Length: 262
Ligand code: CIR
Image 1 (cartoon, rainbow, N blue to C red):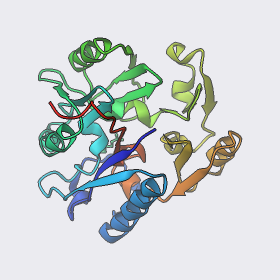
Image 2: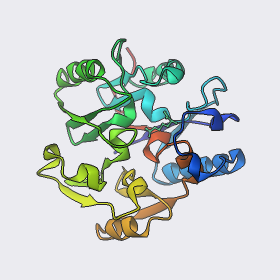
Image 3: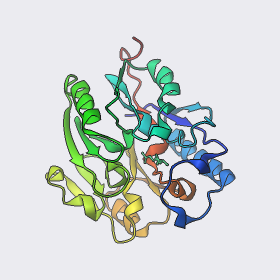
Image 4: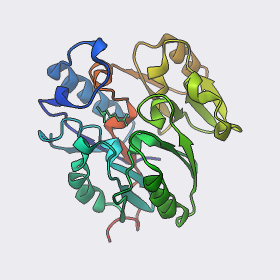
């Protein structure tokens, strides 16, 4: 069970962040803040204590905190983000996570974005993408295998991050876009496949038995309803305009006694 989530308030110039999705229209800051508040409220309603970092005007993508760290009970891995414009976001995340966890770091020339890292039970999938390179994945594998986790690397052909295409819905169930669903490494899981036009909703988040999913994707909603878990839809329009997904707005973790501090 997660007990905590770390988020960051989007900064006023969040629309200057990296994006490839110009066709979705101009981002609206006030709407972004309202949608972010609703996201935080959803996490709180699931029992999480939400730690909120202040906006970072020099880093317009910094509210995508998921990319700056990977947190498990044993360790928080501070990443070296793959996009040069985002390097430095991790500096203000590390001290906060350090209050709860031991820290490890991905060091240059390794790069790794948390959006490429999916944990299913004690097995990690790490996407090799434009943001995560082989050296970053190698360092991550060393850190996590030393702590008893399995790590598989997967090439990300399509989309920004591995979790743009595949996410865990609890138990043995995954949700994947058609491009990722047939990956040999996913054999052995129950893989639900997003219907045509609904790839964005593959980025659905399982938190303590509830599924948080982007609003406006009825086919994915039907698939999720079939699992019998509570489903909460969140409007992600402004996050999507900046190539962001629902998972990337937070870092979720369990604050277990004995795992914090040095
Ligand atoms: C970027 O391109 O880095 C940001 N505009 C979006 C990052 C989204 N992160 C994520 O999905 N994990």
